[in-house]
Length: 406
Image (tube, rainbow, N blue to C red; front, side, top):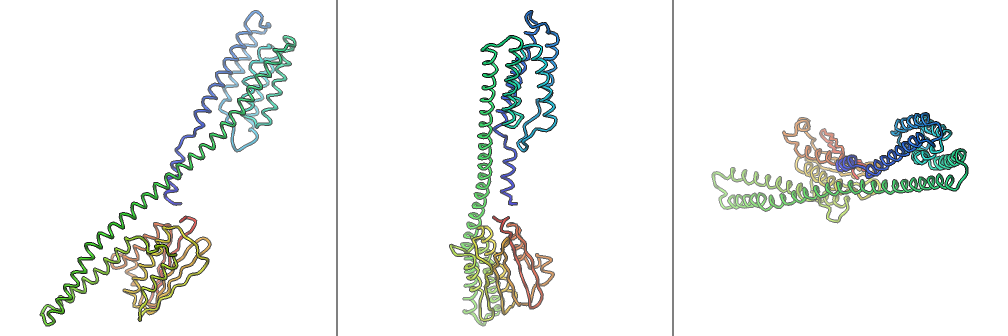
């Protein structure tokens, strides 16, 4: 996985959910409501007109309240539609205790309001509505059995049920909106992390281009001037006793100038400039062709636009590998093959030169720095590189997984 994508995921993971304060407030409000209703039921049971079951009602109310708080940590899982066994047992215990209280005192109908929210929160929507309607009907019948039928005995529980259903549906709508908002915030954070990474990459490229210009305007121009002056000295004094040293100095300056220009090419942006990857590789092969070296470019598979960092890496690797062939391989034929696969992009540079010394492959400091730089560039983009070399056949193979690169 790309580093910027990993950083974005880390930012999302530590981002707090906007639902947390809402859920906490609603849960606290429900606990306070249930506690107040239970206290009302217990206090009214101790009054002279409480029905004669004061101690039993207070004891059962305390037990009901303890059972309620014992199960308040049952959250509603987003991934399941039916509560597990522990939730069913808890709801059954609360309901049975409430029914017993309702049989002893009509004031127990107040506790039904708290049960409505519990049913709507823990049960699926259809089951929750059925439970609320059933509890409302039982509450009306229980109150009527103690005090007789009246408009208040019917309207009170029904209004309480409607209010609970309205609040429950409102909470679900709020929940959906908060989830969508959380998703959008996560996407925004991820996009911001990617943009920040792109800005850092752009800064690096701009700095590399600045260094390339500075080297070109100072070191490269200086070496070019030295080479011209030494050449002029050779022409002016062909019989000078130090002519061999002058010629050696000129050749050394020429070699250093070539290496400096190669470094400038490495630091400069990839030579695409509106061209396709295949056209850029074709241009590299044409520039390398000479009377002693025949070059060929093959493109296999259906060409497609690759991510910019991958195309830039392929161009730079081709430039470096082809330069190695031209300068060191003494090859007669070279073939560059670009292959578009279903999941990978491959670049192979094959020549029939003298091969690479195995010691140079094992110890980059002894002369294979170019190969080490190519390998580092490949690894930075999540690719793989292999080198096979023997006299008459040298192959540099590079591959990039397209999914990881994009």
